[in-house]
Image 1 (cartoon, rainbow, N blue to C red):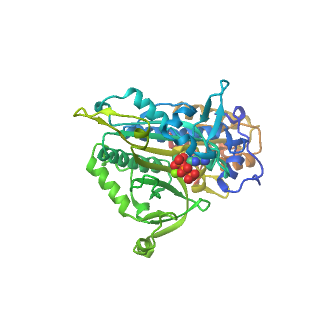
Image 2: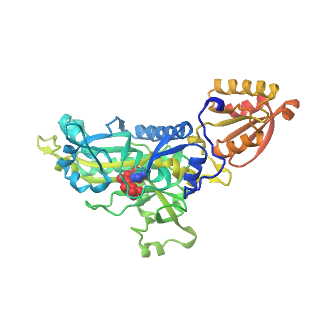
Image 3: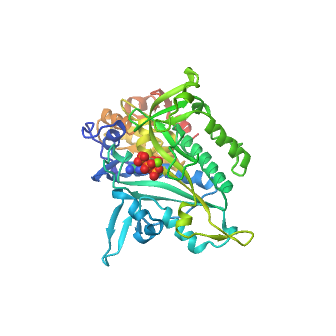
Length: 440
Ligand code: ATP
Ligand code: MG
């Protein structure tokens, strides 16, 4: 992408109306613009990051056997009357009337809708188990939208729903999502610790929140440093290994982690002092087993193997895709700007000409741009006729993993400069070896 043709409104000053660093940086680097309280337009650079995050979520859901679909944002109130949640949900639900005076709503979540779809189309035990998901916008009329996309009113969520014939099956679906979540967040380059959530109206031990550490987080968290050492990406645990998944769940459950809501002083006291980690955290995901709450109230039944009717056991599994953009920045930035983990960076390389009016620099940079792009490397090419220092400042702010800097002085010696944004390390290389490094 040539910056001269992109839409990348970088602000010179750090915006004073934002309270936390990720919100400031998202505004300053031109990722989002607020269009109404808690509602954001995603500008090109923010949209690219959002799609990268969504794609990692998608790939890990698919790998775990969940199947993607898409449900609408606007729902009928009648669906929610069937489960009894239309009245129970409260003022966070945005209620709308259509021209025929029918009650509609902008979906805050989709349990009712998918349960109804299942009820109408699934008849037999042979059709279960299934886990379906979609990545779709939600609306919750939060009392206090704040911190930018972190607590918006409109936000993008991945929500998956599992249907099983019995509790043992539902537990396995839950363990499967647990592993998928651990792998998903690890791939994004962040550490999200699973914490037992305060049990909801159904009770039981099967509800975990995934929390990213950040000083601006909304809840206080406590966990054993062992969570920093686990490598969830490890390939040997397979999704068809029920015992392995159960062992993973047992390991997670027996290692201490809690939010202030579930914190247990006596168990915490048993964690050795040098392993205690305490701080504030942001909830980026939540998985939940709720049994037959929706299937029973909405009349979802399938015929079981012995002919008797069975009410499926369900769970739901959410990831805050748009919240993650803010959470990742909270966890990965420095005083110059954002430092994107490679996996979610909007582009991998920022190519900069120090002198946008020097024909030799332009020719060299154009050539590098063509070659890198042809090799499949994502490049943001700052080809503007702008002061070099300004361009480098914007590149630091935007936070791409690599900067490739082309200037007249270097070119005279046949070299360009390659800078690693995270470490700040710079090296002078020939154009060919710089391209070689970035395409390796
Ligand atoms: P919170 O406690 O932060 O209000 P929640 O428990 O109501 O969230 P869930 O229903 O568990 O949220 O939704 C799943 C995920 O969606 C959350 O883990 C979070 O990452 C994300 N999410 C929820 N509300 C918002 C919001 N207002 N803005 C952005 N993301 C949100
Ligand atoms: Mg939650």
